[in-house]
Length: 366
View 1 (tube, rainbow, N blue to C red):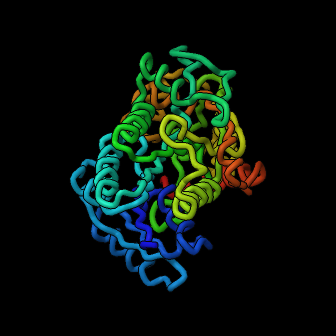
View 2 (cartoon, one colour):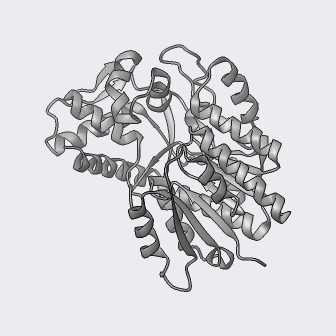
């Protein structure tokens, strides 16, 4: 059997870097023999990846980092994917053009080899969240189960009425994969917490946004009453799910995996409210003497967007802030559990990890 070729994007990121280390440490003989190519920006980053992992011993797969300009370098993206049997796209879930370029490359690979090719797309549960706070749409009691619900059909319906950039990108991936004959599987994580294990960014996104907002405001902030409920997953539990999926593709030809319109799965392992996050920020920031006022301030969506925008993902709109930091997004990962995913970091780890994430954000934000 030829050595499997894997392409990983986002290897310098929080999730992608953690996925990489878990793939490298896998006990799967097939995965240990696989070539993992990482598409990264910057020769310095590529050199660090190559120097750290390429000579890590015979028991680890070979890592080869190649440089491209950025996510908009579609020609290089397609060319890299055309050399891969499996692509893990752990870069920005809302950058549709780069994901579609990966699919084009995989289609070229399939035409060359005649074998199935796969794209594992990282997305997020804000795609199935509601906007009850602003009233844009409300399904706050809805709990999505990937073993029961037609998630694709729901997203298609909502996307028509309420376009959302990440959901649109996800649907574009599914539709293009079907058109090109590329097998796609979308993994939708909720709030991701815990320290990453990659070489570069080891910090999550949502919790630090609450920390930065509190520091800028002088007190913790929540939109509305903070009653919105989201799930969470430890970044290493998420990486273990990816490892499970990759091994299934390499050793089982992906026979047990859903693809296309059915290939949208969840990865939750616990649930929290946004008020819970804000109160933890208040507690830790006070302990570290970074704020004096620990009373959580309630603000509306417009004001919350002004406060959170830069701290979250840069220049974003009300929809992205509300969906990502104040909505309801409740999911049940039935498929992953049936496949054998056994996340080990439960409620106690969440309580501990949440506070550790807050302290890490404080250390990096002065």
